[in-house]
Length: 126
Image 1 (cartoon, one colour):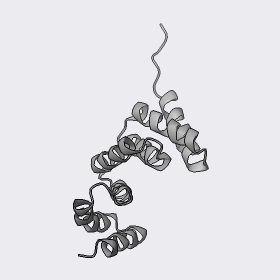
Image 2 (cartoon, one colour):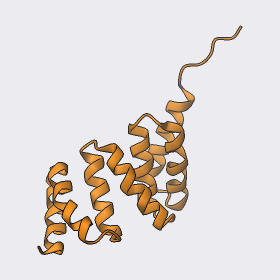
Image 3 (cartoon, helix red, strand yellow):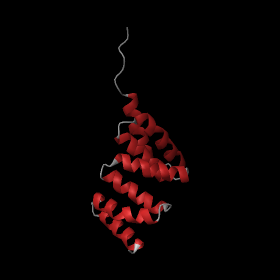
């Protein structure tokens, strides 16, 4: 098996809106190269876009454990946790991403999660 060709095929599948097929293509690649961060990042994206959020979280946590300064992994983990309904955990990662790289996508996600958390139901006075 040509691992590089499979990786490129997975990229094309993901770009074509076929994240499940992309993830399937990456399984043998990650098995052959478990320490390859680029493969794990692409696999995490495929899982995220196919709503396999637990699997995405697992890949993203591996990436962050091996490189805490990976702002993109921090951002996608924050988004993954947000989609799982875990805003307090999401905020920590979104804040890190936005501080490391203050781009619009990161700051918008951070503001959205902060607003959702702060605008939640409140206890009545009295």
